[in-house]
Every structure is written in C-alpha cells, then in structure tokens.
Length: 174
Image (cartoon, rainbow, N blue to C red; front, side, top):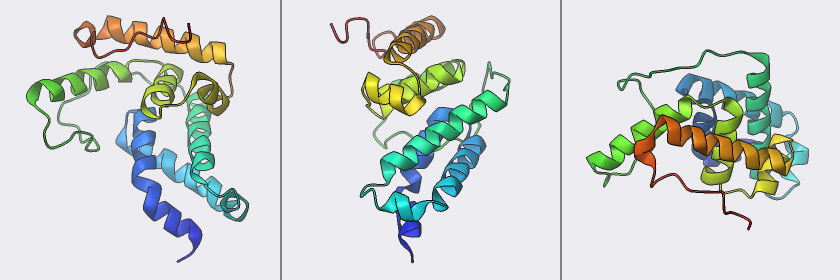
C-alpha cells in the first residue's frame, strides 16, 4: 500500500465530515472529497514531503468547495426532511433536546450562503483563527470577520431557540 492510500484510509472519515459541513448534502460531500483527493493524488510526491499533508489536503478541499459554489448556482433548501440520511454526528449519550438542537442548527446552516457556512465551519468546527480562515478562503481577515458576524446574526434570526448555543463574536479580538 502506498503512502497516499494509507493517508486516505486514515483521514477520509474526518475529511468527509468536513466536506459534509461545507455542502450540507451527503452526495455533494462525497463528490467534493473525491474531487479534492483526485487533485492531491497527482501531486502526492510533493505533498508528502510537507511532513503533514493534511493541512494541504484540507485547503484543496475548501478550494474545491469554493470553486463549486462559484460555478454552480444551487437552489437553497428551505426545508429538509427529517428522514434524509445524514452522516452520524451525535454521540450515544445525546438526549432528545440535544438532538433537536442539532437538527435545528443543521437546517439553519443549510439556509446560509455557502461562504458564510464555510467561514463558520473553518472558525468553529475546524477551530481556525480568523487569519488562518482567510488564508484558506483566499480573502481578507476583515471579510472573515464580517462573514462570521453576518452568519451568526442570520443563524440567530433563523433559529432564535439556539441563542445560548451560538457564540457572540462581537467582542473577540478586543
């Protein structure tokens, strides 16, 4: 087994979760991950020399997502059925209130713009700094700050019942 195959086997589940968070759709996430890994496979020899190839692969994943958003105007989903299959994101000890909160959050995230969703994934799921998120998205730090602010405000509007779950970033960096 070569190094690329070992990397894919070890990290594909984590990369798939990130792809799902970026797209909000299981099939689109699988396509996104496949596209990103196909791009990396051709350059694996130079990527493997980086030591830890995962940050590079994640950047390609985000770049592929942004490219896809620019190429296609996708219809927004206003409602998603509760029966639609999703990757398992909850732990075994989740109670009904937590599950309900996650479903409300998932539906609200699906109604954000693609860039707003990407900024929230980078900042709060991937735990990147504003500067790191700006590098990944190829935009300024101020764009990341404003997109984060607008995305959180939109989430509060779409799902006010999540108020205590949504962090207030207005005081960050002050």
